[in-house]
Image 1 (cartoon, helix red, strand yellow):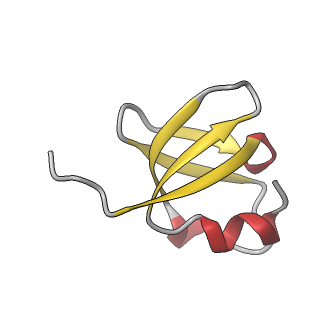
Image 2 (cartoon, rainbow, N blue to C red; image 1 turned 90 degrees about the vertical axis):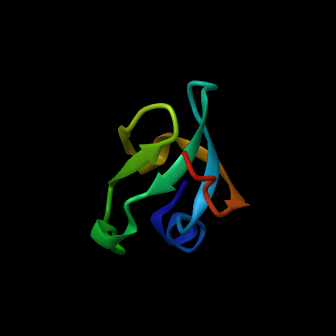
Length: 68
């Protein structure tokens, strides 16, 4: 996914599908992202991931995260 396509979709609680076929839910750490970012930190509901933006095939908004 190109950074200009990624940035507007990265806010809030989301489900992401990666190029390896895995699916994760959580939130991106958007405060460190910018128009030249090549990687992103994802605070996952199950585990955190630091990944290249090019690995992200899809982002689906889920609304707000549920309380633990």
